Each structure stands twice: as C-alpha cells, then as structure tokens.
Length: 335
Length: 274
Image (tube, rainbow over all chains, first blue to last red):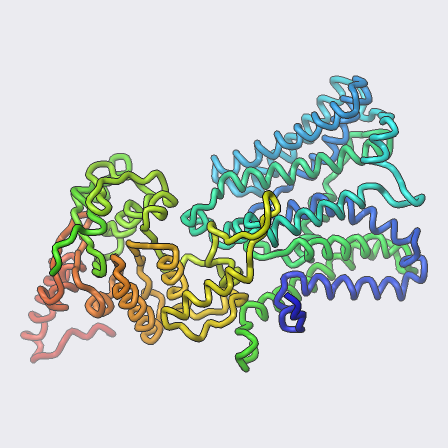
C-alpha cells in the first residue's frame, strides 16, 4: 500500500462516486447556505443515507454477483408491520419480535434465492413476484389480525437506545449501524477471500463454479442478506417512530439501485466497491434532501437525481475503461 | 518411447443425456509430456468429452483412469484436486478482476488469524506475475492490472500458467487459439510446448489443423461422438486430417464436384463468388 498516486486512485471503482459526491456536496453547500453543512442540517441527509445505505450495500453485492432484488421494497414495510404486530399488538418481548422479524426477512430471502436458482428465471422477475406477494400478505394479515393498517409499539428503553432513537437531537442511531456494517462489508468484499468469490461470480459464473466456488450457496446467502437488511431497517423505523403502518416502501427499490449505480457498481456484475456504494448513497441522500435547503423548486429534485444518475453512469464507464486499459506504471502508453 | 502408465486414460467411455447419446465408447490415453490434439467439427462431442474429463459430467458407462487407477469425480473441484485443469476459450478469466485476484480465485492466499483472515493481495500479485513470467510473458509486471486490459494471448497464457501453478498434471485446453490472431496464437502454442516440456499431459482441443500439427504428438478425431481416428504424429497428412474432421465424405464429395467441374470447364474451378 502507500502509493496513493493519481493513477492508482482512478483505477478504483469508487473514483467516480467520490468525485460525484464532492461535487454534489460543494453544490449544495453553495446553494443551500450554511444550514446544509450545519450539524443539524447534516443530520437530515445522514439519516436518509443510513436507512438507505444499510440496504444498498447488500443490493450492491447482488448486483456485483449479477443478480437483483427488488422485493426489499415490500420487505421494509412488511417487517415494520411484523414487529409492530408481534411486539406491539401481541405484546411479545421486543427481543423475540426482533428475532422473528429478522427471521422473516431471512426466510423471504431464502425463497428468493432458491427460486432464482431452481427456476432460472431472472432475479428481477422472481423478486418482482415476491415484492407483490409480500405486499399482499402484509396487507391481508394486518387487517386479518389487527383489523387496521396501523399498529403502535412502545419499545423498552434499551431497544430504543440500540435500534431507534435520536442522539444529539436529530441523529438517528441507525447511522451508527450503517457505519459499522459498512466497515464489516468493506472487510468482506475487499479483504476477505469471500469478496474474491463474489467478484469472480459476477465476472463469469461458469468459470467461478469451475474454480470450485460454491456459487449457489453464495447466491442464496446474498438474497438472505439483502432481505434481512431490509427487515432490519423496517424494524428500526417502527421502534423509532413507535408505530408501523402498511405503507409503500417502493421508493427503496429505485433509491438503492440509484445509490449502487452512482457508486460505480457495474449493472452486469463483476465490478464494484463498498466504499463506492457508500459514497453513492451519500450523494443520493444529499441531492434528495439538499434541495430543501436551496431556493430551487422542490419538484426539481427528481429531475436532478435523474440527470445525476446519467452523468454518474457515463462517468463510471469512463473510469472503468481507464482502469481496464491501464497497463502499469512502467508503460508509457496512455489508455 | 519410455513405457509408462498414461497420466490419464479413458476406457470405453459413454455419455448420454437422456435418450441422446453424445459420446460412444471413447478410449484415449495421454502420457506425461505428451500433447493429444482432439480434433472435431462443431457438435462432434468435444465439449462433452472435456466436461466429462473435468468432472462436470459423469460418464454413463466406462471408466476414467488416473495414473492407472479408476477415478470418479464428484464435481469440477474434485477433478481439479486430482490435477485436471481446464482452460477455456477466453481464458476462463474475469475481465474486471486484477491479475492477482483472478489468479487465486477459489484458492486465495490468506494472512491473519481466525475469522479475520484477509486476502493477501501482495503475495497473490507477486506469485501470479512470477508464474506468467516463467512462461515467457515478460510484459506482465503489475499484478493489479485488470484482466480486461490483457491481449487474448496473454489471457490464455495467464490461465495456463495458473493451471500449471496449481499443480495441473493434465491440462485441457478448450480451443485456446480459436479467437486469436496468427501472432497471438503462436504465442499460445509456444506456451503449450512449455507446458509439455514440464511434463504435463496436454489435451488440446481445436478445429484448426495447422495449430494441432504444430504442437501435437498424438491426434484423435471425433465425429458424431465417436472416435473416428486415433494416430501418432507423422502418420497422416494434413489433408487426411482435415478430411476426417469434416466428416470425410462431405469433403470428398466436394473434391469430386470440383474435379468434375474442372474437367468440364477447361480446368477452371467453379466460380463461388457469383
């Protein structure tokens, strides 16, 4: 390590994401005034980034492996309701509620993974199926059990402290989870041998399998991870707001994919980084929230995100090409 | 010739998928330091044969012998551990991975303790670079370079070096020269010779007779899943081999047609462009 030359920096998948984040930050610092960068102002986009980021990284892993999971869009509200019903309506101990909710997430992930493997249907379609199935089941069971579409939950103090409360007035505790998990995932993808398996699998599944990588187990594990992560975010939200309702979490689908793509992950798999997704999530959250700090019309927010996504993809393509054609420090040829 | 047991031997191997018979009674032997060229047109069963050798498929009947002992592989990994490595047409490598990382896919070098073992990038890179350089590819010096930036020949060479590094005793090369230009292909052929020199049993699949003639010691022609010919270097001419590969009669028919045409057209060949 140690040679942080420019050339080694631009070869990294997160190069584009980092530059994009810096640009967006400067942009909103300029137009959003001092509140955007103030301690309280930063909380607004960090909270959004944390809730999104916990799901975005596992989605990024799936995309690196060449798969996709959009069922997280229904897993967030479903898990939110699950813990509300378990520990709120039925008054089970919160620890039991949390464990069962996470298990529910893992089960849906397992179903997704097995369906993708057994049927060979593209994961976009499979998870679109489970997306709607889970939405329907959630609504049906909520009405069937509680007769309403909203339940309240008052979690004990310790659970609130760990999973859902505000620190320093406006910082959600989930930010700490996000940072911790990001660290763990960085280790997983970039330092542990498993990360190598994941990149290989996304690069060429057949070759990876021939090299002895348990591609099927890894695929299922990734679906379990993304679904469980969505369940985690859902339960944290219920504990934070003391209530859950059958709502739509569909925005999570696009928002995570946008964050991952801005973060430099290749849609067709085989290339990406956790830090890139981290930057991508922050960038997305800044644009999403930053517009409220400026004098621009709020309705332009989606427009900016759309344009930004396109610029990010083009920029990432350029960076990737540079990385591929880079031939080493001794060669004079420029790519 | 030294009388030695072949490294790998097939005895009457059959493979069928349901009602479809793909391989019929294939018997082949490859000794250490010998290059067997497996020739055959598309659909002749070459892929099925190498997949059977590589542990992807199990033979429906017949036996595979390794060093004279019958073996049954439960999967590709099993075959690999026994020393059988396959290198595919595009090198079987990952365009967006670094040389060091792709070299060690599935067998990553690790350092550290317990669950915190980390992938040893530095070691991986230096071993990978040294292994390819030993095969004569001196242009590769940086293990962090991405595979996608290498030429087709370099990729093949890297994949072969990788297989040899991990103790391959039987090297199956699946059309390594098919997608390459003349210069790149000769590069790969030289590496095949190098592998042969190291005492590796090489099974070289191709449908380019020139490439086969350049490195082969022993030739086998596969037609519709059966062994149509099995001969040593120098036993047959290039024309005979090409003829066998194309299914024999088809080319003979074409020859006759052309000869017949020439006779009736004052020695001019048929005008194929018109």
